[in-house]
Image (cartoon, rainbow, N blue to C red; front, side):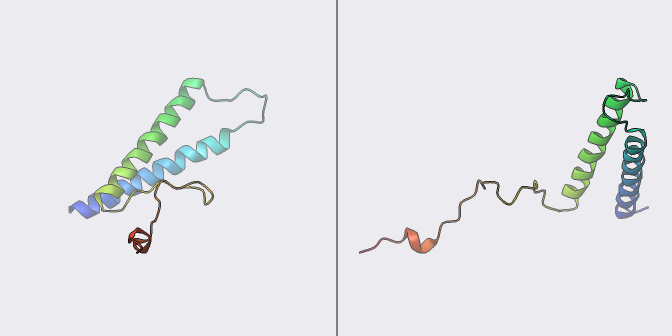
Length: 92
């Protein structure tokens, strides 16, 4: 089996696991003030699993050569400042 098909299979497995875990979260979400049917430990384990899935997905994307950019709000200040080369030229 080739590396590409292994990684595609891994991506499908990760996606399926993520979908199942998020469906469990949706199906067991309770109204505010009611006791959640899942134990605190189970909820924490689900969070940890989703974190591991997300980390592995990021690794796979990075290994495939995709740039990893953190999403940002359009009104969020940017760290990079674009400076025109013309503004750097000395004026006589």
